[in-house]
Amino acid sequence: MKQSKYIKSLLNTIGLVLICLTQSCDKFLEQEPGSQTSISEQLSSKDGVLEALLGAYTSLESTVRSERYAIYADLQGGNLKFSPNLSSSSLGELSVPINLENVYNFQDLAQSSDLESIYDDNYDIINQVNLILEYVDALTDATSQEINQIKAQALTIRAYCHFLLAQIYAQNYNYTTDASHLGIVYNTTTLTNGITYPSRETAFATYALIVNDLTEALNFYNDANILEGPEYSYFNLYNTKAFLARVYLTQQDWQNAYDMANDVILNSGVTLVSSENYISEWEKTDTPVSEILLEFSVPRDSGDTVGGSMSAFYGYTSDSDYEKYVASEDLLNLFETTDIRKELFLEQPLATLINNELEDVNYYFTKKFQDNAAFVGFRLSELYLIRAEASIGLENFEDAKDDINVIRERAKASLLTSTDNLEELLLEERRKEFCFESQYLFDLSRNQQDIIRNDGCISQTCNLNYPSDKFILPIPQDNIDLNENLQQNASY
Image 1 (spheres, rainbow, N blue to C red):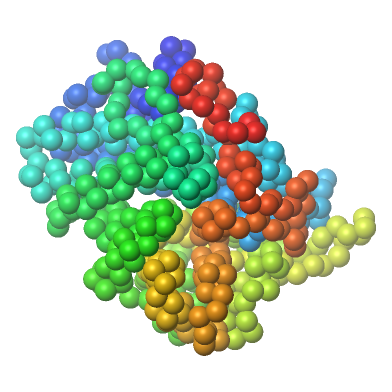
Image 2 (tube, rainbow, N blue to C red; image 1 turned 90 degrees about the vertical axis):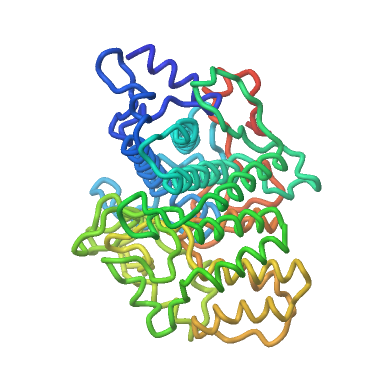
């Protein structure tokens, strides 16, 4: 297997990885002569292609629900701090998890990046769906509708993985006035087309390719039911439109962002959770919040905590059994007294080492991700705030105010009565509504705002002024070493 491992390392470098060399796809395309199914055999039937597509979803769920990605935007942005240690050797101490220490200190290393697996895993998934796209049209045992539905979902997964990579490894779209700064490698081919050593696209080209994949996918979606399970577990017509609305927002393409968000709000059939049900919906263990458009979910059972769920990072069971991440007061202090979203914080006094003495200090665990909780891909409330932000960009300030007030009224917060400071108020509303949903750092970057971390910050560098090279992470050095065309990010 030494040769296979070398090939995998080489292909990671250029964003092309043999499908499923990891275990996430049941080894369905791992190739060792005489022992495994070949790519052409596996992808020659509808069942084989659907197995591959399900494997890509499984890999994607594992990636976004990993600690390195799931908490990244909230930790860096200042929504999170750390609960006290439980181990007897360091009882009550506050410390940064070793696997995220460099990232948290804005000192990540290209040679051993804390998020290297995110880079590699996303390109693994991209290669998986590229293989599907290369073989699916030749299927003889699938209907044209089924083929188109497979293509739609594969294209959307490809766009989603590239979008995640662009958020982490490239400066925000408007970092330069013409988006001419570095984006990422955008991979649309596989090993079957030969090994290449691509360069990074510009941000402009990167996002144009994302939009192209998504608009093509929208043309392919239909009513064919190709995978078992609830619709919210897979990409479909309306959560893909929600994704495209987010992409347009990132580009500050205000009219398209508005139109796409408006389409989802009016036509998806999904409605906002009511004030009366908001807390209970988040506390459910059998199904997701009813306004979810897409979730990356663990298997749901009778309500027992699942080790692979988001509760592995945010969960609280008892004073001797709880997880690492709790809300910062920077976040908590934003909520008005009447705001029902404050009820989503579980207050617990925990023994904390202060001046070499253990003292009880109150910590606040989120109730969003207790018990059997999944990663939120998209939910309807985001579309209201996307539409609001697009309205600001279009100078339709009253419409923006009205959409922000839809979310504030649901939360029983005071309503906005003027259009003053709408940009600032909208960013704050997004912070409150989507806390712990992996968005805040990217919101700050998109709005070109400083990172300010006060409460609970134990980093060597708590704040970061915009612009800064440290808003993004280094391309893993192994990839740079093996591909001379792959340019490293500044300061790394």
